[in-house]
Image 1 (tube, rainbow, N blue to C red):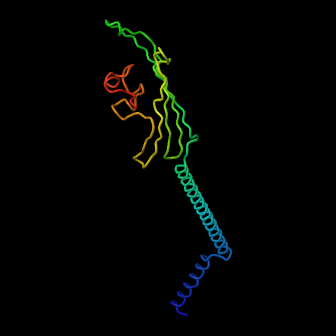
Image 2: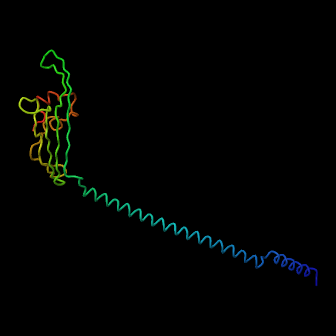
Image 3: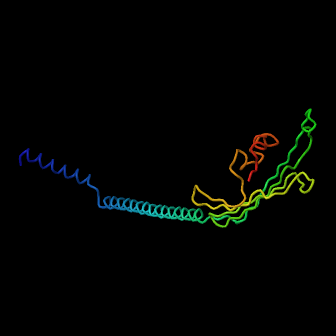
Length: 207
């Protein structure tokens, strides 16, 4: 055997010995497989959890959407079929004056408290389009012969809606003349008494 052949055989033996020392054993391979299997099972479990959460979120979203639609339908129903709790309407207002006038003209001297007017409202809604309104007014607390006040039926009329912008009225009602005739409550003018222009020149509460 020559020296070159001896060297080659020695190299192959040494390399095979090194590779045999570096190769994992069956036990090590089995441990690696078990670790990989556990990792795969963990990933599968996480994927299943994520899928279940996605399904639950989808179900909640569908339930929320159904609730929103049901609420919208209910609100539309209320808006469409809304009717007042009662078809009758009762209301009113009063107007109490205090005047303290000191003038050279004795007829203008005044220092008094006067319950100028007391008004009662009565109304009835026959339908969404047809309504009844009325006002009964007592002026200056006392009415009758020689008394300062009077009792009068100021308004009593039927209002019927022909369209959203047009309606018809029949009965006793205020005329749309001047600024204060239709809206003559105390909060629509300045001062204690109505101004002379609207009270004398243009009659207020003209019906």
